[in-house]
Image 1 (cartoon, rainbow, N blue to C red):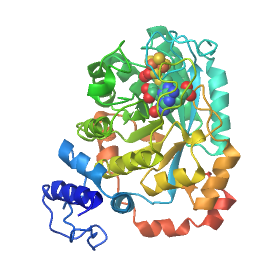
Image 2 (cartoon, protein in one colour; image 1 turned 135 degrees about the vertical axis):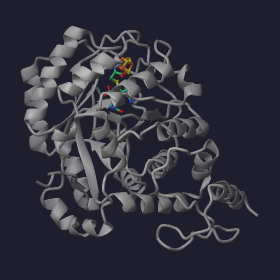
Image 3 (cartoon, rainbow, N blue to C red; image 1 turned 120 degrees about the horizontal axis):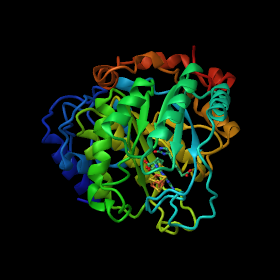
Image 4 (cartoon, rainbow, N blue to C red; image 1 turned 180 degrees about the vertical axis):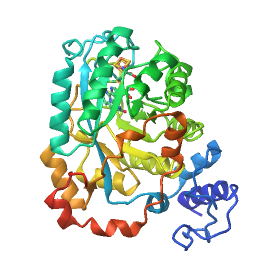
Length: 402
Ligand code: SAM
Ligand code: DTB
Ligand code: SF4
């Protein structure tokens, strides 16, 4: 038996422990080299009881098997040709006191970035209107803070209101929040709060020393309890091991409710940061991680986030095939580049992808409501995808449907 077959056998055995002898989602068993596969009965179900052994077993699957299962799970819950489109804006740039080793905005690293004060509400509203006109349905405001001061929060609340007034979904990432701050943002109508775990708990202190993993989990709990939707993921390519990637995904997938949005960032290496020069991650390992995230959190939007500018169209296509169904759209992330809009329009057209319509922004009130949106989203039949042909996509590739 060759090494691959052994790995497949081990993976299959681990998956089998979760109890299936039944057919796959497509009604036909995958066939590894050493005999018929036994796949988990609950593949595609929303679970919060994943084990590390199961996650490692998914990572160990042959690439084609993993993508097949990820795509099958994806099609059970989503139209596979729809992608959620968000645009980012840095509303306060640079001079951050934190020491995140990847970040060009930390005051501790000389990255040549000039500091910018908090933007005026009107300028943010203008940027949001431009993003909407270009086809984005969600507008994400990022600030280089450890945590917002109360004065800052007042201004951000006005920004949130102006974004929602445009009919866009709103998202903010402002650092750590207290429960009271989270409630204020929720009351103002903020739809999503982004706060990443970034990596596994074990690897975490190699990357950040100025706040703990538990601090991050506490902020996530405050956001969830306040009734907002959670956007939480991490960064790959920081020198972490596959075990770290598995542990990060396990932590996300065993939260009381899965994050509605799971950004998977590839490290954007910026000169002057400690992680500049880190060994690049095998692109296929990046795809694998997307696929495992899709299987572990079937109803979440998995976002192919930072790093797309450094990826080929073909690699991005593989990520969509693995179950990614959200992107950042627009020439800039926060301080670094992103593919230009024309390039993304052409990519959507080539792949027959269309932008997903915005969810109604009126549904942000109350924790029960937020949980429902993650756990209770209706299954969209794959047949619905049939209308999204490359021809229609090229007519208005990133315009959301009404
Ligand atoms: N300061 C706030 C915080 O850290 O929570 C919000 C802004 S911070 C820039 C948001 C996220 O961007 C980080 O948690 C990290 O995951 C991501 N990020 C920052 N720099 C990055 C880089 N060079 N490459 C990939 N992702 C990055
Ligand atoms: C996320 O997970 N990625 C975005 C967003 N959430 C805030 C940020 C990426 C930042 C990349 C580096 C930069 O542009 O400064
Ligand atoms: Fe500051 Fe956020 Fe960058 Fe960390 S990731 S240095 S907290 S802006």
